[in-house]
Image 1: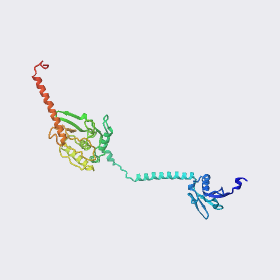
Image 2: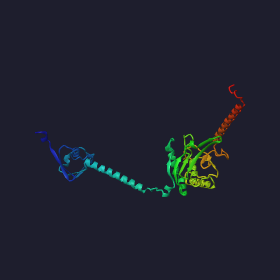
Image 3: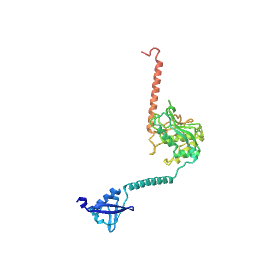
Length: 344
C-alpha cells in the first residue's frame, strides 16, 4: 500500500465572499498550513486573514498556537474574512488618490479664503509705467531691484497717488556723464526730470561703479524730481511742494521715524537704519534745474560732512593749492630765463 493510501486526509470547507472552497490537508496539518494554503490559492495575505469557526476563538496571525491541528476544525463551517492583495493595493491606490484630491481641494479653498489684494485703478495709473536699469552697466539686476523698491515704496506710492503723478519711465543715470570737476570741486547731478514726468533719471551708483548710494538719499532725490512734475524753477512754490512730498513719504514709511528737511538747498542724510543697505552716503544740494551734489558756491561747503570727509576734502584742497603754487613758480622761472638759456 502506498504512502498516500496509508495517510489519512482531512477536508475543510471555507466560505469567502459567498463562495465556498474545499481544501484537503493531511490529518497532521496545522493551522499554519491552512493559512499558507489560503494565501497561495486565494491571494489573501496571511496577515489579512481572519477565520471564524463556531465555538472556536477567532483565528488570525500571529497565532497563539501555530501548531494547532486542523482536526480541531473538522466538520465546522469556516468563514474567511480578508481581501486579496490585488484588492488591497487597489484600495490603497484609491485612498491615495482621494487624499491627494482632498489636499488639493483644501489648498484651493484656503487660497480662496485669503484676501486678494487688488490695487485701485488709480494706483495703476499714478505710478511709474516702466522701470528699467541702464543698459551696459554691471549688475543690472541689482539696479532693477533698487528701482522696483523705489516704485513700490509705500511713501512714494502714497505721494504719487495723492498728487496724481504719472511718470513714463523710471531709470538710472550714468554717473560719469553727469559728473563735472572744476577748480572749485566736483559737481554731481543726482537726478533729472525730463518733460515734467516723461522720464526720471536717478543716480544710483557710486562714481567708481563699485557700489550703490544710500537708499534714503536716492529716495529724497526722487521726491525732488517728482516736485518738478509741477514746478520747473526752484522757486518758493517748488520748495514748498518738494518738502511736502518729503514729509508725506516719511509719514507713509513705517520704517522711518520721519523728519522734516529745513528750507535750504543743502541737506544731510544719515542713512543709519539697521534695515538699510550699507551704501555710501552722499551729501549735497540742488542747484539749477537738476538735483546736483556739490559745486555750491555759497555757504559752508563742509556742512553736513563727517569728520573724515572734511579732512579728506581739506587734504585735496591743500594738494590743489600746492600744484597751483608749483605751476606759478615754474611759469615765473620760465619768464625770467632768457631765450636760448633753457638748456644751460
